[in-house]
Length: 268
Image (tube, rainbow, N blue to C red; front, side):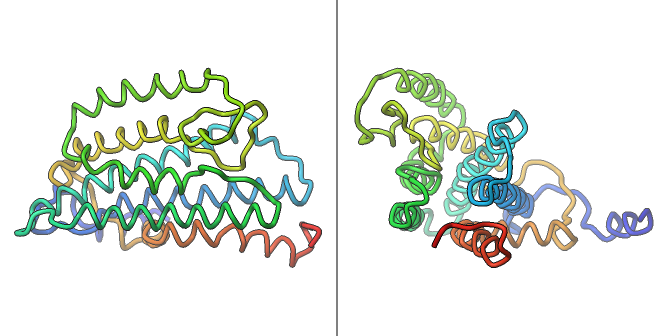
């Protein structure tokens, strides 16, 4: 084991700041996103076992609660960081960021539409309810974030406004679910996936602030060895680059495996 570690350390590229000319995918961001994907699959497997196989798992215990929150926060922070890196790298091109907003707009619509489709399927199968989940929120945030991407410190002001506002919205009594996307929920509202826009867009802006601080002009501002070719970083990086696809297919696969093995019974 010590020999393997020494080999990896020797073969890994030495730590260095990234220059614009060598700008490429930031392996640490892909790895972080891949780790979040793996964690999400673990959490959803626990949820499936509890919901469909009657396995006792207290998903409201401190461990599972903060585990789920860390996964959600990672995905949303990475949205802000990734958008910021893409924006500033586009600014360095000869034609600037021409057409970038419409690229973000189309991407946002794709993510939002995917969330809408998944919510519709859950309703149709009567196995859950998602009115404004993580994909809805990320899709809308990708579209809304564009004018904020050039700011660093000013985003702290927007965050300071949105965060308290999101908690205030929770106190407003409503009797309809029409405004849940903002964070206003009627009594007894309990969806399977809920990411109100006001609160979580503030988290996206925290990601934008981090992106503008650690990846100024789309370039890494700190030294980091490149372990992207080594396990498990290469696997996590691959998963991170295909996060949307994995998000869409992982639950049907998990539930299918549980049903085929006889562990779960959905009553179909």
